[in-house]
Image (cartoon, rainbow, N blue to C red; front, top):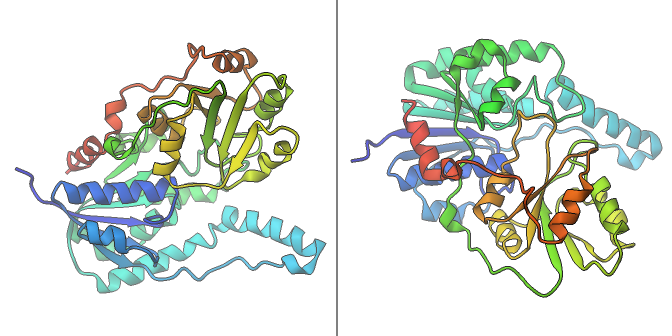
Length: 371
């Protein structure tokens, strides 16, 4: 018999947004409901929620519209563009602006919310979600919450995959909120190295969860063209496709392949599509549609993060559709491996171990086991 728990999820990303953190929060909420728990989600105001709320008895509490913005002076010519580039980079880096607005939003909503919960799960990124909870932990929440679980899909101060790490003073803020949280959940054991050792006793591995049966796998297309694809964002010098694509377009035209890219950062790919029709770029599609499309391809491509502390959740997606994974490390392209994949030899495919750990049913049980 299921012991019914009252679950509160506080998040920035949620349905119908398409992002890893929105997917995390949404899938947790849905599966907690499926297993008979009472679920409340707090997130910024959003539209098109009707389909989800009609299917699942989720209580949605709006944090309101986020209004803080970085002013854009693109219309002011060259100086305006330089301003935009500098300010759009430095304001989030130095002050976590505009996402810092989440802190007063969270405080305001709990001024009127007096309910108690067995588990509070705060989902980052962005990290001001955690900071907002920490800011009112003793005054408004601690007596009403069984346990607080700070869910960290990506690290903050010790992250490896951005050009700059946050300034030193954010270390004080990270340690401040972690002292208050009962548990900090991270996706893999390797994630530990991206957090301060004094909190290792609080770290628990609870990976991204997926409902495997939601994905409809298609038959592989066998028409003599080798098709492979990637879905996600790119980052210069880290998850950077240019070296890989330049090698692909250097191959003779008699080698029949199609590299399909689904991304919201097409600037990394578009320069190549005019010179080689084998490179094809698409707008992003939702996760289910993407995986169904990729399941009909011969293999899939992963652009590796720097270091081993951050593991892309798309690797689990790729494992669910049971496709060979060509792993590309920026700056260290293994041309022999690429040629082997094009020839149907997948010996060097990236392996995903213990795939059942990523079943959403097991992920939910891991959260329940913390109580």
